[in-house]
Length: 162
Image (cartoon, rainbow, N blue to C red; front, top):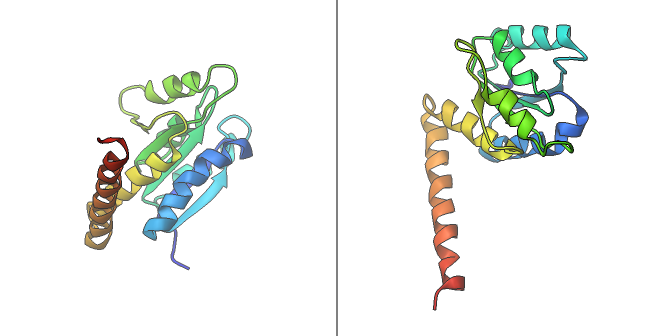
């Protein structure tokens, strides 16, 4: 098995359905990853150790999903020089708007890329595109994937056209 280059972390196992979407697209592109539950609030020391050791362990990008106060992506970013992609998890009380705003409103110097609420798949795709910058084989797969999306979209015109 290949050494993971993407870390997928989440604050709770309730985030798994959203974060599994990132894992599925990484699998589709053959990008090795690891997945952990690490809460910024319940396991802050584990979260800090995970994020601060990621570079040394060969991780190149961290995808962090969190709901509610959604501190995990930002706290992870504060402990690593690696790019962090935040995934706001839909919540019962505010439908994930609280999560989105928490992740998007990072202070200067601690950036976190942010995808849509529940956007696990796009977080995985963004990580793939970032990795593809320096991996010609992966870039070829990204280009093929985008062509496939275009064909599928154009094919749907047949169903709606006269």
